[in-house]
Each structure stands twice: as structure tokens, then as C-alpha cells.
Image (tube, rainbow, N blue to C red):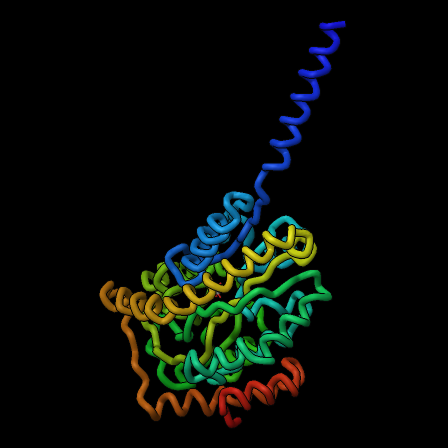
Length: 333
Ligand code: LMR
């Protein structure tokens, strides 16, 4: 009798212990992205991890997977929808395959002159409208993160549209970007970010576009002789989560994570410009890539050649959204 009682007691103690251990398992957030750690997005992701883990006192663990370790672009959206990864920060050029083409409004050439103009859009009604469109896809938009202004690179000096004729240029999977390249008389080639270095090295493509932080950290300066400071567009990110996962979190945890994201967003956006300025300086110092500063006339020629991309994509990005962005930025087509 005594033995049975003590076995029963021991069993229930064991079960209680196991139950406690299960209850204390932290919730894991896998945060996958394609760029290097030493970039605005890479650092933003690490900072979010730090804040999220501190503020939830270990109830949440954020596993950050940089450099396409977990998924390449082109694979990550589906992985998010399936719940194989909980958080991503893809560039806005990569939302077309999700069926939300309106994000490509950010890809329109020369639509932003400054981060201030960009923030008017991301933090205003357009940002909200875009995030609303994600809900039916099982995705929740949390924040917009900046990288910076894009420059074109190639192995020949590129200053005016005529210099781009016939070049094969790697782009992200955005129709707007494809039209941009065609407007320069060049040939667009969609390719995953992780494959760009090798494609440039082997001559599969002749050139590409990206902000200096990506150009430098992917070592593209080793395989591109010229970088033209065209500032013709931006790389902007949307930090997104699997909606079912997010909605299923305990309310206090979600609130803590929202706070962590708010502060990580401020951090990432505050460092973005300096990260790119420093990366450009590092490219210059490497002596491997010649940096070309365009004259006002050369810049005007680029703008003139590229502005047609706006009208061409009006219905793709949405007439109302485009009008709203023009209102925010003062851009006149
Ligand atoms: C690219 O694919 O060119 C970049 O946008 C990657 C990134 O996330 O910055």
C-alpha cells in the first residue's frame, strides 16, 4: 500500500515536472534574411533578437539566420506562409510572387529624393494600406526598415543611358525593376541575391544594382570595376510575420515583441545611412572599384530615360497608391 502510494506520488511529481518543463519551453521565432550581418538589416535583426529576448525574459528565443542560410529569396515567402519560418524582412521588390504587386511602388525610379520622403510613405496611409493587403495572404506586416539608395555597377564606365545598352543586369524579382532595366536598353536578369557574386564573377551577368552596404558586404567590389552613384531607387524592407503564429501568441508576449520591433526599427533606420556611407568608403579604399559621380546633366539624362517606368506600371502598383506617394514625396512625373 505504502509502496503504491509512493509510486503514485513519484509519478505525479514527474508529470508535474515534465509539464512545467514543457510550459517553460521558449517560443522560437526563426528570422531568416538574405544579407550579411554587417548591414542595416543584419544589425536590425540582431538588435530585435536582443530586445525581444530581454523583454520576454527568455519566454521567446529569436534565431536569426542571415546570408540566405535558411532560405534564398524566392523561397522565403512560401516558407513563411507554411510556417517553416516565422519572421522575414524581404525587400519590397519581392512581394509580387505573394500576389501583392503594389509593394513595387517603392521600386519606381527616382520616386524618393531622401529618407524623409520615404518615411512619409512608409509611416503614412500607404504603408498601412500595403500591410492590410498582406492579411489575406496569412502574413502580418510589422514595420518598414531602410537600407538605402541604389547604385548601378558594371565592368565598364556607366554614366548615361547609352552606356547601359545591351548590358545584362541582375535584378530582384520585380516587374518594375525589369522595366527600369529595359528603359535603359539593357537586359534584366532575375536572380537570387545569394547567386549574384558568382554570376558577376563568371560573367553570367555584366552588372547589377544595390546600395553600397550590400555591394560591399557581398564583395561585389572584387568583381565589378565601376560603381556609378546613380541613387536611382531604394532598397526598402518590410518586416513580416506568419499571421497565425503572431495572432496565436499570448497577448503580453505579442505586446512585448511589438515594443521590441518598434525600437529595433528606430535603430535600424537610424544606422542605415551611415552603414551605406561607410560601405561606400570601404569600396573606395579597396581600390578595386572606381566610383563614378554623375554630373547634374548625366543624372538628368538617367532620370529622363527612366521616368517612363512610372506610367507603364501605374495599374500594377495601383493608381490611388501612386497618387498618394506622389503627394507624400512631391514627385512630378
Ligand atoms: C537584393 O536581392 O538585391 C537585395 O534586396 C537583398 C536584400 O535583402 O537587401
